[in-house]
Image (cartoon, rainbow, N blue to C red; front, top):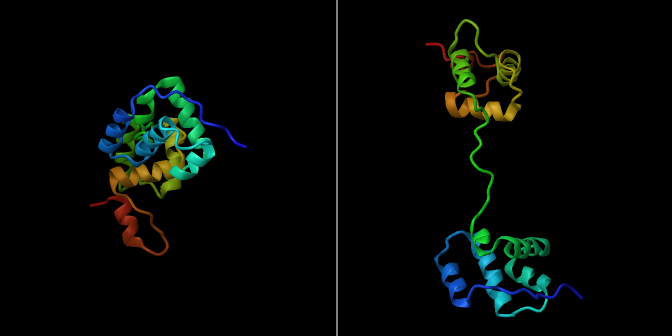
Length: 159
């Protein structure tokens, strides 16, 4: 038959609707809309409500559990992944910068950079993380040594 919605929403409908109208985040608006519809008893089953909002039933159950445990503010605050940049050490950053700009003993590619960081600095950094870091901070780009000698020079950053 499905789970029936028997939950007490503490906030008034007017407060929820005002927050719904002023919030610009689609995800937060979905969460607030679910609370409004639960408060108004528009749906008998959570599965029907979830389908109406356009989320999975388990997602709606997670939101309800989060509301019960942490309150309304927890639903209006998104906890996304953050802004991880990969390499945290300033020492490693400076060493990578020197290595990229070194014309006598440059990095020969991104895999070489991964091995070099592990060997010389003891940091095991994933290929994609280090590649993105080098592109973001030092404007390097992938090269094929056999095909493009000029690209090799750009990668080495020789003047």
